[in-house]
Image 1 (cartoon, rainbow, N blue to C red):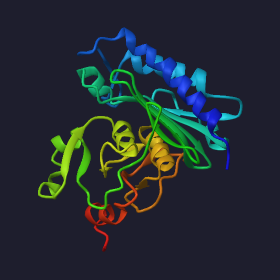
Image 2: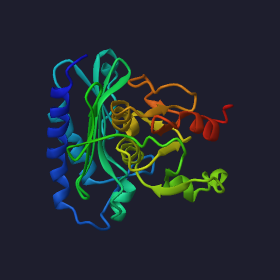
Image 3: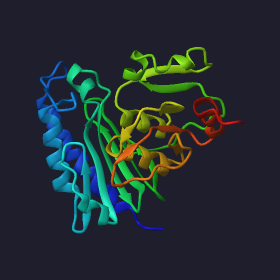
Length: 259
């Protein structure tokens, strides 16, 4: 087994350094510009992107970020950093603390180490294969329940009515921003599951998938397979994630597979 301690130290250092960017922003409505795709972008997104790239990327390593023009050179690299400098920018702009810095390290298509950090609420989840997962330095795992009770849903998807099919289901649905933040909360046992059938970019989910893998959680795409990263088109069709004992229920409830 590869020693991931140096990778985790690098991730932890990068998140701590980048997190200090947010000291200069108020915890309330924040000014933002609009990108070509109508998504908001702030000074924080761009500053964190620069810091993460400076701290994380070593010789022979690739880079994929929401705020950096994609360079296909990453496709020839065995190790690639897949990051979202600020996942949940809409929540950040609105002063809602459901956003995070998301970092994932990908090797040969697998997310093998990652970190999710929200400095406003003191939430730091770190994890790597063979090492496990921690929340603020304390070992953490997904819930081991065999009955689905709590699900984190995209607030945007709920507002659009895309969760109406589960309106009468026997579990609690909590709308929340940032898919990376939701994945991290499932990885450390703060909710049983989360899923989205809306396409997501690799940078949205790589860090959270790494945490779930490290913690022994369950994660697949809507096609029923484990997610593969660092592809020419860095986009997944969606994602389902939970604790280790809910795979059958999620496959049945969300994908309609026979039990």
